[in-house]
Image (cartoon, rainbow, N blue to C red; front, side, top):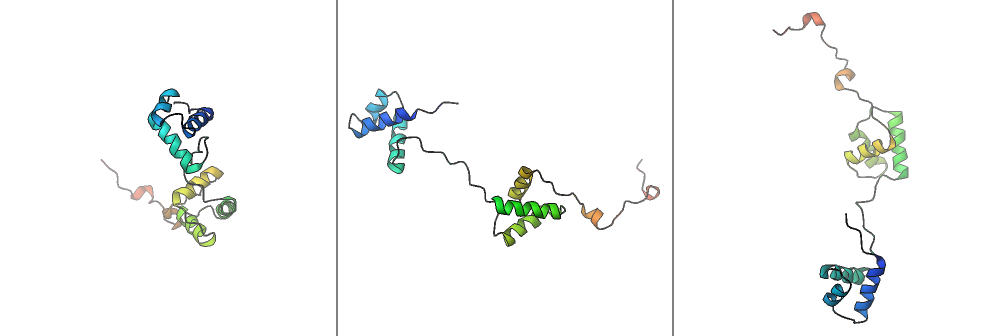
Length: 138
């Protein structure tokens, strides 16, 4: 992966442009950078007002912060057979958070918690048929 140009190069390039030492094309050649990079620097400077690199935003910030996360932990510890849908609904109703099931699952994984696996068949009290009544395939 290519390394970013230094902030010093950015400052020198933009200072030279502000002092009128040449056009973007001439300065790009002088500082051995591409013309699109020079235009990018100029645009970022006009938008942000800073000559240094603009910090990159990485995704959306987490919605499940400390308070709701601890509440989620308490719910799972108290009732490990809650489903992701139920936890999602509880977070929406009690904490006012609108997050997806996948986000709930990722939060549980980060906390090292697992949900209890209860199949509907076992909850309803269904049992397997005794071996003598099963059909034998031939």
